[in-house]
Image (cartoon, rainbow, N blue to C red):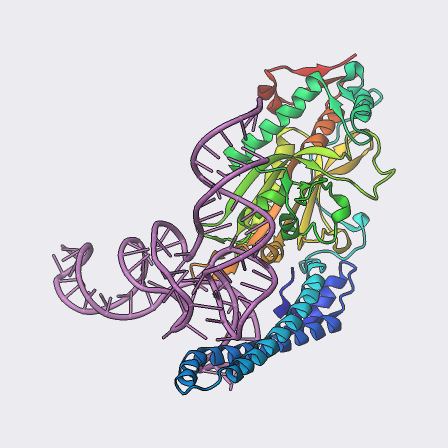
Length: 429
RNA sequence: GGAGGGAUGGCUGAGUGGUCGAAAGCACCGGUCUUGAAAACCGGCGUGCCGAGAGGCACCCAGGGUUCGAAUCCCUGUCCCUCCGCCA
């Protein structure tokens, strides 16, 4: 959520910044609502103050009237009038506030100044490239073909069990999938200073509002048929960031959490896109990095966090590049995002494997997550960040494709072997 | 699933429908005293919103209601605790 005070004080620069992501903000309408809202507040408060003062004097007045044998009814009637006036004013105020909040909740975050202009993925700007794509002296297979023998990767069975966009994995592939989770968690805990946290995979609506999936992106979510309004998490970002919803954080910042969770996405509107293989699934695993930091630290924190995700690719010897998302490709809540893309030999291009974002105070304002700034002693909004470190399924398929051998077997990257009982290769034939 | 009890400021814990944003203690911050510290004493010590300011308004789990007036009464929901049942 944007700071209404900022929209009020510099409406043009806000509108201009949002234009960079292709959003046309109705500043005029917003400011009008805001003005009406504040008028309504003042009116309500004035009437309430009157009512309160009158009520306070009632005790004595009633006693006095009784002593003199007077009728109390007129006194009550005056009070009732005051009550009704205040009540109506309050209802009006609530109605205006509701409309204002509805609008505010649908406005995306303001992109950083440094975010490049652009409309789509094609306009993202590459900032670094690491590792050399391998040259193959045989015909490259994609992960679907590599995983087919022995049903190591079995999409037909998954379709029977559930439908399209699900996977069944067996044997060495399933084992590597599990190994990747352990490997990534260990690296982030031991080398990057994150605390592991385990969270629910089912969340309520408040949590989804907090991080920004709702109200606008309901269609991307799986909702449980349940009167409690539960949703399956689309990413660990939701439960992990919501850990501090409504809190004033007591301890020191930064707080760094790493969490492994499954993620569920209905992928509405993606029909015909990446239908083959593991790239786009309704269910996938992810190791997620989440940070809560002091505002002045968030720029550096994003660089750090992105580096932590990149470190995994380097340890796994996977070629990748990192891009800055342009305004048009930026997610709803993000002010700045780096996508890390891994090289896929079968597609001869880089594909997203991690997305690392700085949300600044956008999520914190929705979440009401604050910390006590030691310099001012006052509660202030924190900055939140997160990034995949990494998406497990996509890492798995990247390893399969990049480490494939002519016989169809897959060499296990050195860093992963301790997590797979020391074996050097899986699959094959 | 059944029966009962509860939710008050960082913590503990009072609170009769009116003068309660709320006693008291602890913790914390500042001061006096002290060579220093402790003790003692004095003062301060929640959050948000409106307002140029003075000040005002709201918040005692959440949302409704009764009342001139609600932390206190009523309804609904959430969460926690105890007991029974079931269960990985």
